Image 1: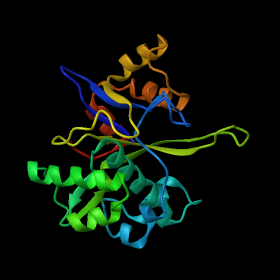
Image 2: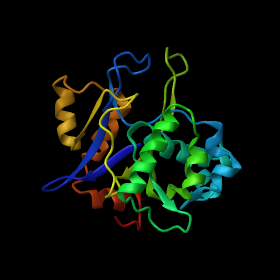
Image 3: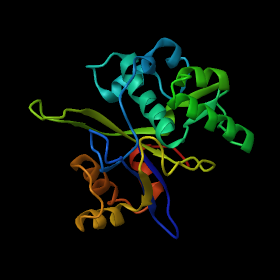
Length: 229
């Protein structure tokens, strides 16, 4: 999940997290929040907890090699992993109205996020108990990367874009995040060139693509036609 926000005085920034050195996969690398798709992500109950995208629409975007339900699971996994890793929840109320986080609601969701990490609750049960739905319309599919079959470590990954909700702030450290930072794409590329921001090629390429856009609005226009912040 490539999370974006407006920068001051102009432009926009990308949220990058550094994985702990001890992690066997991409340890010490800067990347975007994300992870694997779980079976629950494309279950019938979970799909009932989604808003802004239908299974048929998801399959049309992702490709016919997925069932409509499995295609939806990619979007749900991105939303879930973003919440698990950095505490940002892309959701709406059951009515479809925007999620508004007052201090009490924010505190309750922080407790739920901790319970999710220690596996005392599931993401689906969190949505059901809080009467929320995943806001899949807030994500835009960005790119697809797959390693060659002979690679020592293989992955098949979809990248999504999302704008940071105005009333939320991501955690800067967590179980899976050594530290994190907001950078403009240009600044991130300069640090990479100096050897100060280690990352793999898909991460670099996403930044290079985003560096061609001057504002968050221009990114929205390209990847979310008709969507307003």
